[in-house]
Length: 301
Image 1 (cartoon, rainbow, N blue to C red):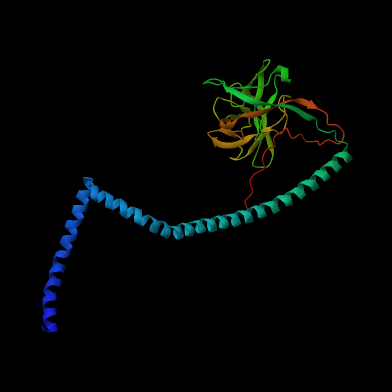
Image 2: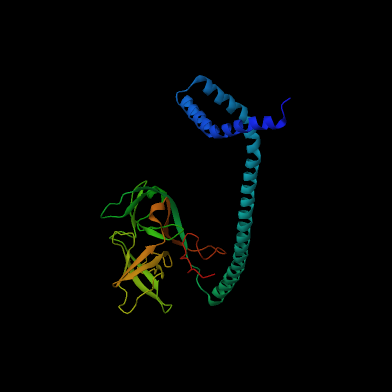
């Protein structure tokens, strides 16, 4: 019987030989698999398919916890965002409730003072709503075609507005359609008032020049409004009602004052046409919702 040391002496060289050629064997095997895959050898392809089929249940089993963890993370993120949104909306709701109470108190006070002073109620604006049919403008004109005409009660010089502010006025009335002259048109002149740094309201004319930002004209030389000053209609001339929101001063350069209209010309779908006034019936509100109100200046939080 051979001693135990003899077996170890034989196994040691074999182990060293295996270690020496193991890396080379793996490289040769890898290259062989790549070549077999490249030339689509049927046995290799079948083996790869079988391995994929066999590993699919295991992959699905291991992927379920990962998917569950991902879904849980998404839900936690959603709940966190909802909590933050809920807190923001709650705070905003409280502020709105506060201003609602202020508005109701001021409305009641205004009504009482008007009655004491015997103020005649403001007339209520009659209006039509119409869809924008086409932009018939060009390089030298800025007009829109709308879907309301004489049969609908449309009248020339009707004032076109949206909830944002003034759009223009009706210059041509057909049987089923009408044409609007935009306040940016070269032929447009709108009497307005503009805020000045001393808090006064200075009268001026908003003159269109076919650019998206019409200019203020006929301001006194010593009056220079600040950027951001609000511009509203003055009511002079009797065509445009007073107090319609127009825009804000966007630039004051070299004596030329440009106004950015509140209306977004690219998103005009419908307009309201103010068609004149009628007295309020007894008990009716004194301010018509047809008139867009100039937004108040933003306040820092």
